[in-house]
Image 1 (cartoon, rainbow, N blue to C red):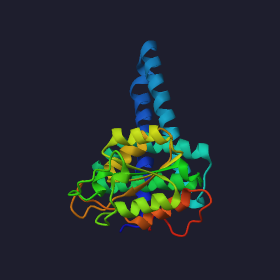
Image 2 (image 1 turned 30 degrees about the vertical axis):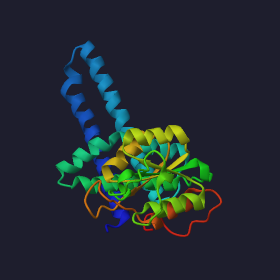
Image 3 (image 1 turned 90 degrees about the vertical axis):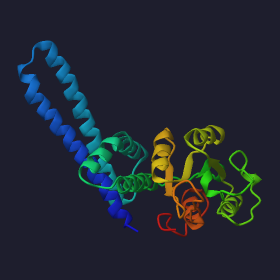
Image 4 (image 1 turned 180 degrees about the vertical axis):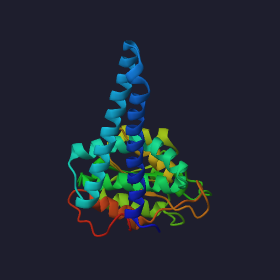
Length: 262
């Protein structure tokens, strides 16, 4: 497995590169149009320059906050939210830049998740058990199981043939909420139903990123699932990684392992 610090540096570097491209674009725009435009065009170009400058500034501050959080291990709420805006807002541009540079999209996605988790960790949040929601995809259930659990997880018979038995044990042991989602719409339904202050989500890289961006300010700790049979079929997650994440964020419980390693 790639070292998580290295993975973070991939996305942080792409964010910095995006900020540089935006800043250079603003400078080029100025020299190409502003000096020789009529007044009306000058105002339009000035607006574009102001927007590009603001974007570059926000990105720069976001990158600086990320670097500081990696170095110090802690940032304030507002700094973390500003960095989160930069990370989420510029992800599509950073992804395109990375692809142009020859990086694999999955490597960039994994780096994004590592950076997101770093920001969540740096906020040092602690919530009550009933304020934490664990969201897992429906494909963690054995595909041949007749007992569907997407509406009610307690339909599971806990036969031990898939990881759901362990997930329900964790839910019962810690008193957190557990939801099994079939997609983004179902995940949002669980957010509306339980109104958590913190989410620990399990999914593939693409769905995790979509969920992180759709959470609307709710911190999401992302854990990529294991796919021994390919995507969306009998996937799995190490219960130890989930337990470590729950211990990290639930108030009154002492962490004993790192959720990045399980």
